[in-house]
Image 1: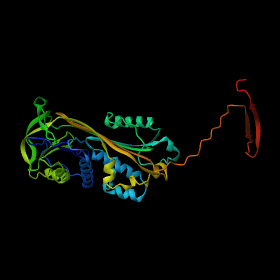
Image 2: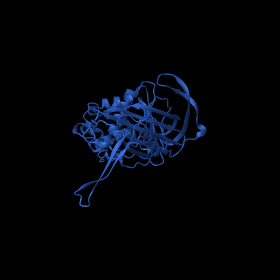
Image 3: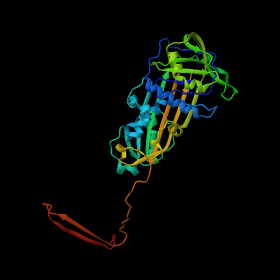
Length: 378
């Protein structure tokens, strides 16, 4: 089981069988903003609790927090702002801040059918596109720009789409020795023993922690990011619930040890999470009851949640750790917006033409040409 931080990934996977734990970093990790951390842990715990036993999970709380800030900046009404407050207070800079090892971005897509109602006052970039074709292309281009690759090829749905993406990449400050990587035994969460490619290294100056409940380490990236590896001894839910204090204690070197031998599997994971149950559980009632408005985008028109997903990948090998996440939230109109009926007027039989012109003072109309078209080809 592992957790990735520095406001990006706290990814939790199946219970593992590390022999011990280690760390490159001799200095304490810089303290994080408490509100950001609290929200990240809460979101991750909720998502983790909904996964099926035995399933891997890759999740970016940072990308979802950015999404909630993006929605909050554009949503109208006190109800939705109050619901989002615990996850956006103190985090408004998330959309514009620069992290050392993480690139991120956001984008809003609006269906062309809503173009007539577009206010042009949105917070962040809004692209008016046709759904699904142009919307999909904009989504693909957005992923290439932020993530460097496409990890989700599904076309956006509904009438209004919010996208956030986060890309973490950091080489290890001290890489693993690839010659020590070999197949080693791993006991899965369901109790099966399998052989998996596993990295190994002796870190004489590394920092680890071994308790009756878990063993852990943290490995530093070249720009100071930290990747924590935490292996529970039989109670992953309990470890997830107390992850904040576990990492805080480790950062303060409480109960840590030096000179450790570390084994960890090489991994390449990918999943797509349905975030609708999480948004339900977090109490975002405005997303579901038709009381959500984005006045700066399309005026006084109510929306409801259509779908919410996050696609995420994580690669950990001898040389680096890399995580990519795309969070997508689609909204649809609560009710169809009244649109004037289209009346077809087709000149497919003889017709008149009347041309009127004004004099230069604009006070008099003159009929300057008239015509009757009996045969357009004559």
